Image (cartoon, rainbow, N blue to C red; front, side, top):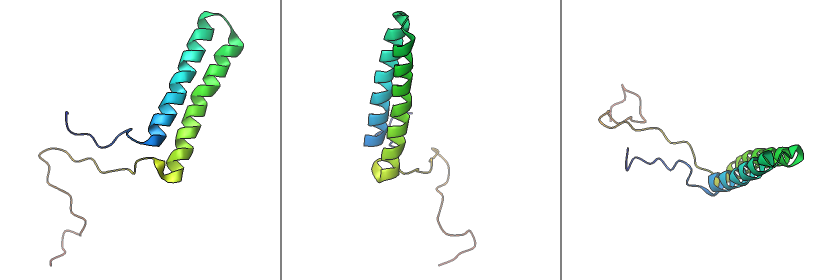
Length: 86
C-alpha cells in the first residue's frame, strides 16, 4: 500500500496526542517495574490525557478531515446523482 496515504495521523493533533500518550506509556511501564502503583496510575492518567488533548486539538481544527477511501481499480465516485445529465 505504498503511496496510498490518506493523511492518516499527519496532523498536529495526532502528533501531540501520540507523544503525550507515549510518555504516559513510558512512565507507567517504568513505575510498574519499580512496583509503584501511584506512579503507574499517574502514567495511565497521562495516556488518557493524550487522548483528551488530541481530541480537543482536533475539535479546534488541527486534525484531519475524514476523506473517502479510494480503492485502486474501482470507478471513481461522482458527487451528482446517477440520473443527472448535463
